[in-house]
Image 1 (tube, helix red, strand yellow):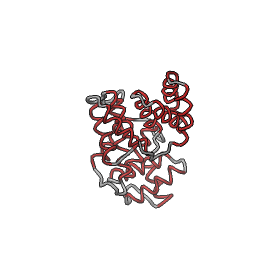
Image 2 (image 1 turned 120 degrees about the vertical axis):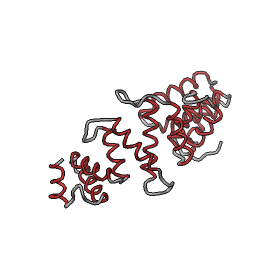
Image 3 (image 1 turned 90 degrees about the horizontal axis):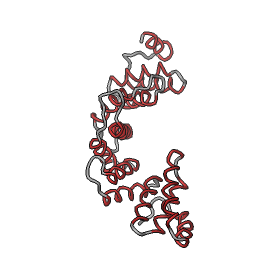
Length: 244
């Protein structure tokens, strides 16, 4: 701690007593320069003064194991502070608040091994709903829909799931587009469903391509040849914002 404080004084005229904005700027610069130990200490001082951006940065470093030993429970505690502070939609701290909600939802969905945070699907569903409805976050809409389809954290509700998937896929969310297409296919709208799944596969992030491909290939294997040809031709015309 002493070394970090001296580094602040010598390198930037910054100490633990400095204004939180000055501490944040120092920490941000130190992090970019690869001086992660100094960055962590400066973020911590600023976070203790209630600086939301520093709280977010510190939590993310713990979650990623960047400059510190990875500690999801420590990240969880900091994200909880951000969430408990609340935020007015559209304020400068909105992005940090939403990220905290999403992170907490994931932690409650999966639990944190070796910590007091156990799986709580009801809480995860509520947090995803907050991010999906109040802030219109596509990933939250997608995750909420998945929980609604699986009956996680409450009753299953396919109609509500489709509503959230439809909102998310209109922003171009590939996962939502794939699952929405699969539901359409199962409901008998073969061409549209196959087209959405094919379009999603063309946009999928690497971590999601395998499950999207499996979904599409399963549907293609039972579709007739005409529907497959029309769907493949239609897929490139599907864009974010398309209506039903």
